[in-house]
Amino acid sequence: MTIPAGYQYNDAVLFCLEQAIVTAGGSIPVRDGRTWNDRRTQLTAYLATLQGGAATDVEALTDFLSSGTWIDPGGNHLSGTPSFSSGWTLTLLGGAGTSVSDPFDGAHLIGSPLSTLATGAALTTSDIWSIAAHLLELSPPDSLSSDINIAMGLCDEDADSATINAAFIGLTYSGGSRALLKGRVTAGVVSSNTGAANNSMRAHQSLFFKQGNGSGGNVRFAPLLTTRAIDAQGDSIAGVGAGAATPQDTPIGNFTPRPFLAAWRSSTTDGTARALSFRSRRGPFLAHAAPIS
Amino acid sequence: MAVRYKFVLTQGLRAAILAIAPTATISRSSDGYLGVLVPTASVATFEANLPASPVEVTGGLGDSDGTGLIDIGAASTWTDLLMEGTWINPGSNKIGQAPAYSAGEWSLSLLGGAGTNVSDPLSGAHLIGPPLTTCADGSPLDATDLWSILLALTETNAPALASDIVIAAGFVNEDVDSGTIDGVWIGINYTGSSRTAVRGVLSNGGNAQASSAPSTSIRSFVAPISKHGNDSAASWDSQARGRGILDGSGGCLGSTVAAATGDLQVAAGSALPRPFLAAWRTTTTDTTTRGLAFKARRGPIVGMVLP
Image (cartoon, rainbow over all chains, first blue to last red; front, top):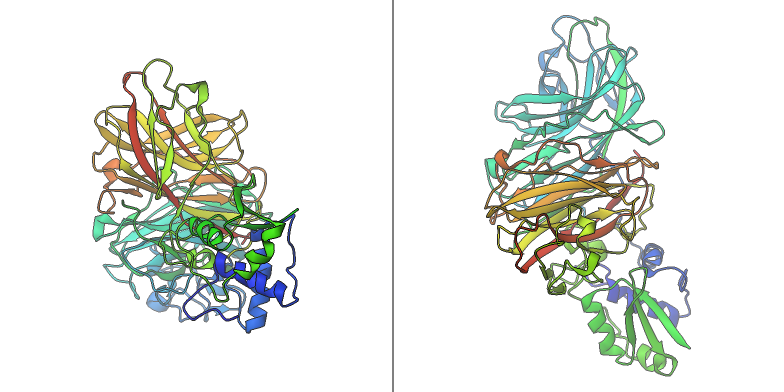
């Protein structure tokens, strides 16, 4: 049995396929005792092998950005070229002139726009949408008091400018500890919150979302109000969220988001070049028409 | 003896099954799935009637756009949060017209006057559904997964606006109201001839909430709900803080209606989320029975293992 082009498996299709498999002498992995949903993945995978296809998996985390050329504003932020293996590894220079307050004024990488949804359909920019985001430390700077920020986010232009808008989450290495960082860039101007210091955090989990349909103030783009820190065991860390009182949303209008990464120093105190590595991943890109009527 | 098939319930699937198996008994099982009981004598006829080619099924769970593409193809469609179930009427004095679901919309009326007001969604009229067990890609949702889901509550027929009535939608971690139930919710509050957007948490049965400034333009409240962490203290959050408060054109209402500050997260732990709906009065001022209608919809739930 062939699924017609342009169709996905649906209940009735699988219903018929299941019967066809049984009729043809095949067996279904599990019947009573487990739900059809439990069996669906197995059945879909089985059908994929029959047809030489691959089962769709929108659940998996994907690398946020795994290639591209990092920008080094002023030529005094990066030592060498960042490299990607299972995560990004880079070295930040230290000392005079290396500190900035804006992710786009530090070392950064802006990727191609996310114009395709998890379903394969093209993004309709008037839709509201959300993307789960995970920023995971692989190797901290060799001194936690380095005043270094790493961040991942989404923006609306392909290069830093006075009109670029963005929302981002990050980890701040400072004062011998770590803190969550959450922020926005509105027309090129950054605003951010830092959470309480905690030395156990290893990942920053959040959700970027665009709410509303229209231009400018009719659309808000933000990370979660209070983002969450995860420790090395995968447990959430209470009480260290970055900025419960500040949404850090930007009136951005309908747009196609571009992923970006950044790493920068917030002071010149540390004059030593520091190496670090991190992994940034995202969930599937899902969009919805505004739920009106 | 009968052969039992189990499928996710869709309105279209119900019709499709009855079309080829008119003698089948179709029922909703306790775990939230559709049971199809076919008399043994009819099985041969039933299977002989199975169409030889795929059938498009439209309508119902996972097919709110009516395209026939459900499940895997539903990753970008709204799904009705709950389409059926028996509403609880605590004290037997909350519900007037019994809640009815039709075409994506719940309609009901609430009684007014003495004894009808509560301060907790689950102490008012409410409906708790079966847990969400399937991710957007069809794989099971593991209780320890991190997950996120978009929730939308949309007014379709407002009660008299001075009624002090709240409608809400959210997720809880138990199947009935209790002293240990946890959850997160969003709502629209009709009060003072206007509306406010409300978001709240239930923590061990206790309710906490934050309201926006009033605006008569509020028509919908959209919030991403997320679970963070994989232990017993994993936090559930609904943190739209009013940025998902939409007017009748789908535009965001301004910061003046942003919900008040407050974290409003609850350590609900690694439990599968159960959708719930609620409607309640916050005062006894209005003694008139009020009718209302709303839509509660969700995006697909996306489960992720720890990063």
